[in-house]
Image (cartoon, rainbow, N blue to C red):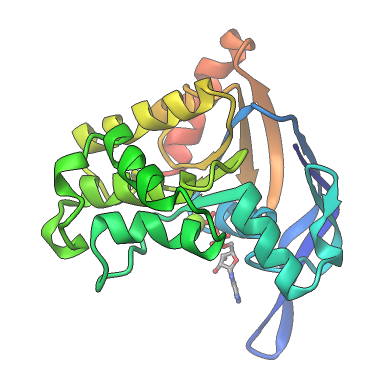
Length: 241
Ligand code: ADP
Ligand code: MG
């Protein structure tokens, strides 16, 4: 589970403070699929980066499965991140000098898993790229690179997957493929937090959070179908890119 209490983020912009995430309380139970929506600049990446421990909040506490990550030192934080959280980026962020197989292997080697080679091969099967393991990222399409990035994020079996606009750089067909993977990952019990501009993709989520100006303006459950349709189109209209 993920629990934020009184979390905010203030950065220095020029020479003055700028609050890019207002005081936020949020609880995401284990196994939930949450879509974080909102226009560009509304704070989606800031929120995901804080949950992932990639960035430290200015105020508040962030609990991942009962551990307050804001109290952890760098080593413990890295360890927790390695075991609990997978992160998928819009621009894949694969290591260009390593093959697809080696990219998937890296987090498991860091974690010291003895079954790493076998698991890496299994992860490539799961994303349908078992024949491409020896290829370098530059030899793969964007959609394929993103699938490898998902396999890498899941290689240590983390209970939480955070995906920051994972389809934002892909065409519609590849985007659908990535969403099918995220759905399958959610079905097997992984907590998924997906930042997306795409109202259609957000329909896959149990809950959607609508962000605006650094705050969660609204939280909508999937069951709220009536209000949801108009909200989705409103959010889509507000997020042209
Ligand atoms: P989103 O992912 O929804 O597009 P972000 O979380 O990336 O939004 O950014 C929210 C706002 O915070 C934006 O206006 C962005 O320019 C600003 N911002 C993010 N990080 C920094 C930073 N380190 N310094 C200054 N401004 C930042
Ligand atoms: Mg962003």
